[in-house]
Length: 346
Ligand code: GLV
Ligand code: MG
Image (cartoon, rainbow, N blue to C red; front, top):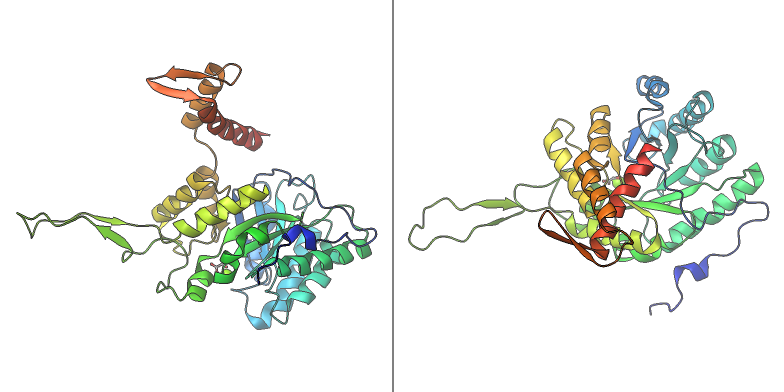
């Protein structure tokens, strides 16, 4: 039977001494969340030079890190966080996130109990994979409260969930509202495709088989019929954006696995930006530049938005600009662009 309680009813006070999670998540730029494997020495050596050039660096402990390397990845992250200036913490140039192992794995508990005391003061956000429902967030939330209190941290660590199971998608609303620590959600298209038994083997992006075709022309049955490829991820991204907007947290696209196809990558990121996402994952340095470009409003968008704001005076009524009607609602759309531009320029 569905519960009549809202997820917030399950949120109990934090452990004595633990920092209080913010009621409003601070808007910090996070257009590209760049993934690195802290057990990979070559990759780890490049991290200090990347600080300041990307919004978020994420030490990945989950999928793509071999089982035998889980401990090395965790320890590598502790070393990198401790030794890299400007990475993580309230005044950092680049935020530090981690993706811990899933809660049903043998490693998640050790990830949290090792990282929070060691580098909790620098960890901005913990990304939790394969979240199924509010109960997963409650578990992480309570554990973080205890670990933060024990470590004497004065700033709460925020939580980001990956939407990558069918059950997670069904529960997306309650996941977003499960804790005031919730910072945002990302789409996990690879795991989600597998969990739903979709028949794509790609990591994100489109598929040439998922299309609509123009109707045949009766008098020319052999004539070329235009093909329009559709977006496999539209439904889930739109659901995620609505759930995040309802709860005042941030939606993100996820991984785009075809690193060589920068054109399709940019298209997929732009679709997500237009639908309301604030950022995406980057799996290769060249995807950082794409994400920074796509998830920043263009000069034309900002110029237009500022013109509408100026023309709308006190913000009520309607005006004509370049033959188009602008009113209170289109002003609000323009303010989204202006606020984002200001936040990115700050
Ligand atoms: C990301 O984790 C994905 O499964 O796509
Ligand atoms: Mg995944």
